[in-house]
Length: 73
Image (cartoon, rainbow, N blue to C red):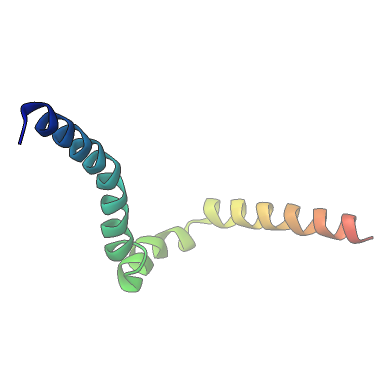
């Protein structure tokens, strides 16, 4: 194999690996992060007990529903 071909192949493989690495990282995170129901619930349960978070969620949902009602009426 000629040195020029070897250099081109190396560059192409480095570019390919650079493009695929973030995809692989995201796939592994998705498998072990949100897909793990018990871990997700354990992480989010304290937020459900926080009154500030509950108020913010209620305000956001209320504003969204009010906007939908105004559009329909």
